[in-house]
View 1 (cartoon, rainbow, N blue to C red):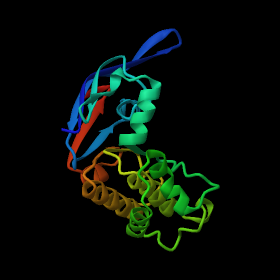
View 2 (view 1 turned 90 degrees about the vertical axis):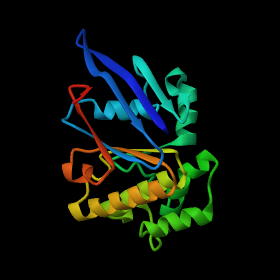
View 3 (view 1 turned 180 degrees about the horizontal axis):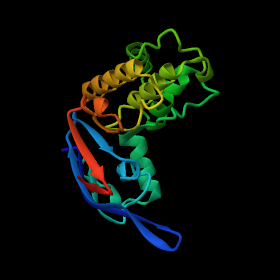
View 4 (view 1 turned 120 degrees about the vertical axis):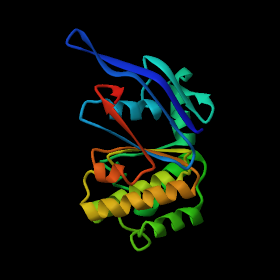
Length: 218
């Protein structure tokens, strides 16, 4: 088991009152497995993803990643964890405008100390980006930018890939292609994928699905 989330709770204070976002969520994820996290807006999907990725800390509960309880880590520890083991694909791409496609793909791998020029080039080729390596993000289509973002994440060889609506800005055909590549390459590297999506069609393409409703597993 790569990931174990046990009874996670998270609340925020708003206008003087406490709002419960997650109310005791649990899940497990094995290496090589893909899991879709679905639910209406406000159900806690993105909050859960951020907690699993060490971008925030829960109020209570445990999150075990590859045998380590990440809820016991401080900010510096969680940042080190993200560099070493977790890759995140955002809906908005978050590419660095001043870097070429090649340098964007290499960026996270260099930070993680796992940059391999040959492997990065192969990743780019698999993503259909071999002819785009010297271009800059503004010269690419939305679909191409998302492929760069995914290649950047996977090139760092994370143990866990987190994706928050990664195809939300893409047309249906491009979304299918991008998801297929993400799933294939995640599994090939022995990593696991946890993806937030509103799309029933895309959720059905993953191994399992977990549906949240009002901060709890439905």
